[in-house]
Image (cartoon, rainbow, N blue to C red; front, side, top):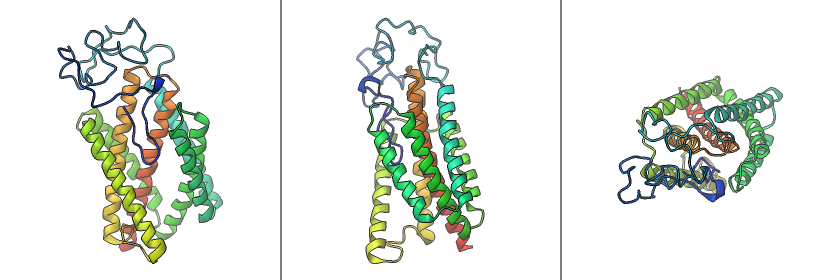
Length: 297
């Protein structure tokens, strides 16, 4: 499936340019009819993995153990295929670098201008990675370092206005991650084509709203349309957190599909990149919301 992480990620696991598509219809008379995974183009009537771009011409995994949640044959791990451990370790490295860079920026008290310069560089690196055919660990780690510098600078700035807001935002981000993961594993959140379209539309509208607000602030002065301050700013920030949580659900689906269909191990870097983008989005929105709430008290 494609991933629509804010703001850069535009694709999911793409060996040979392929990806799972929610819209693909199951073949007529397929044994997988009614299975949520049956609409994946990797699945075929005779062999669920025969159309898998990660599989072999004669698939030895068709008789794997059934998936406990979906009742679908599960392919056992094979050499060179992505595992959940790969995703966890790459994500830990990427997020760890973000945290270290943020701590360094905070300790060195880097100026705000330098922090926003780091944000621009991080955005460029993220865009370059998003349009590359394969994940580049060097680009992803460089993005994490510059994004961390930006987060450290703005966290320190918010802390001066609302003491303790960054720590509360960190705890809130962890809580959102845990909540979305639980809801996804329990299938409370059903990531399907309708969910994807809704999240993509909401994110585009949210970003356009932010751009319009910035333009009004730049040319009209003041707070623009007021979408970033006061009660309206809090409401907009909460919506931003909810959108970030929805992107996390898409990330979890992306990881699940990659492990399920045996994506190459290097694709775990792409999963780490997407999860980092979503968590950074949630943290920045929470940080602003908490600062606004504390400043109103």
